[in-house]
Amino acid sequence: MPNNLKNEIEILKKEKNAIILAHYYVDGEIQEISDYVGDSYYLSKIASSTSADVLVFAGVSFMADSAKILNPNKIVLHPDSTADCPMAHMVTVERIEKVRSMYDDLAVVCYINSSTDLKAASDVCVTSANAVSITRALPNKNIFFIPDRNLAHYVSAQVPDKHFVYNEGFCHVHENMNVDNIIAAKKIRSDIKVLAHPECNSRILDQADYIGSTTGIINHVETCSDKYFYICTEIGVLHQLEKKYPDRIFYHHPDDVCQDMKKITMQKIYDSLKTLSPEVKLDKEFSEKALKPLIKMLELSE
Ligand code: 13P
Ligand code: SF4
Image (cartoon, rainbow, N blue to C red):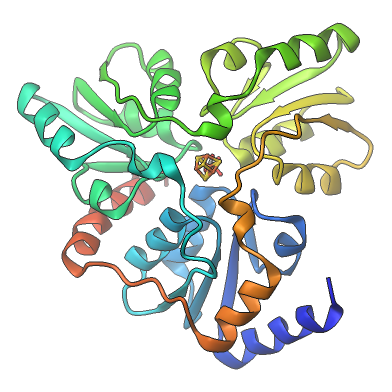
């Protein structure tokens, strides 16, 4: 990376009282110049409490939109507004309304990887870091968990006393992971530990020694004395793992890449700070409605 681009970003950040929030899935060089790097839960907590005037979100649309919902009066920049998570659109408001009409005592639990209109139609948001504890704490018997079916099945196994209604959404990166790669790695290294994100398909999760959010995976390594790990989530997480644990060896399949996360580049971050665009603009009515389930998530996670 040209050093001057990094310096120019630093100058612009000071000039505009801006911060950069980056998800673990963006390129390592972006994680390095960011003020906050983390999982979806951590980043939404930071977004809800910052005193900065400008927030630059290095991640996909639902993350930048959540920051805007939490800060309607601040400038939230998304350096590439086409960087979107396909799963965030894999259910409709009509389906939510239909399921509501079919069940009494129902809570619509909305994974934060969802568009603003879906959040607005939901009762509470969750991330992979708090989905189990929040769902368990809800008073409702019936749970409609949207949009991710893999996370829903993972949560339902941890919360067996509730009745789940599933939706057929999925993350193509985690859904398409091939279990044969893990089995092959285990054959070569029988002492390898498999760490997986709950968006993975059940064939992968069945092979996992640990299942958790991106932060959960990174922190879990600290608790292990093992040397070899097979990481089942997006490749960007390797940046922090290799930086934090230089004495461990991490295996990862090169196909496990989220192309939308990779759309965010240093140049686009520089351009967006310079021009204060593209700015996140949301429908006021949806945004106000979506704030409630997000605030409920932050309260229930305390
Ligand atoms: P985390 O909340 O674990 O960071 O995951 C976000 C995500 O998009 C997973 O695909
Ligand atoms: Fe969406 Fe999957 Fe990319 Fe996460 S990794 S942002 S769930 S497409």
